[in-house]
Image 1 (tube, rainbow, N blue to C red):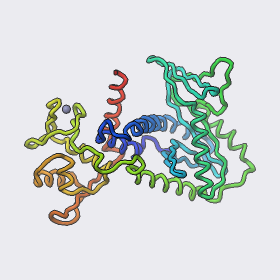
Image 2: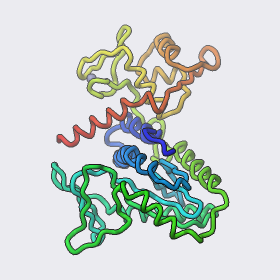
Image 3: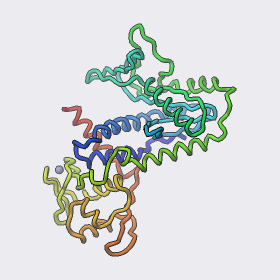
Image 4: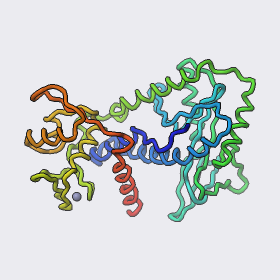
Length: 339
Ligand SMILES: [Zn+2]
């Protein structure tokens, strides 16, 4: 079954990076572009799950949120269907309104209420992914054909071609996914079968995990690039100050009893689950060992070691505890549109 609603951990991590990096940091533009891409991928996946689950012939395994690296070059695939004989990259498009795709120019133009917006031709995009995936496969000893589809999933979209232009037949509405999948399958009826597709899937997932682990390195980030501080839940300004039993924002004067939890969640995403009293004081911007100890003991999942060597282990649920980051991102996006 194709899983819906799964928030990619990479997305949460890079939103936490964005919050705690100075706005003039050299990697911030790349991070913001990747957040936008990942967000649209996330909502796109939610929207394609229905169509993937409606494919009648279930002789494939769906794999989501793939990040791979070939010769130092990273690429991302939102949804890949792994059949015994071929792989199918589905480039999901969740755009609404009128979308015109011009393969000659390599662009997709969306005409919406806010005017025109130009994107890359989804076929070009998927073909590039296919090319990189093919290199990755060969490098790992696999030789298996790759098919691509660009799938429009929004109920409120009309896809058009330019006058005198043709629309690539691999661009489809979600409704057609089942039929298209059948067509592609037929093409490969007599094609040799992959020995063990689960071995391939595991290899893909292993490399994706590796990407997640070295995320800081991939963005060229060092520990001391990050600005410590408790973020104000009201105005998102960083650096709330600790008063007796609560936090106060120096910007909007909002007070909050639990703002440190958010800060520790972000610490967890950026640096991992282990934290010491000293690190917590630096991150939260407090001086008292005792306050830090009190706060950590309330939140930490467990503690290891004794005295000054105590390490607290944070444990948050990626699927449940971080919705505020998606909300934060939405707010940022709306503010940008308003500018
Ligand atoms: Zn504030």
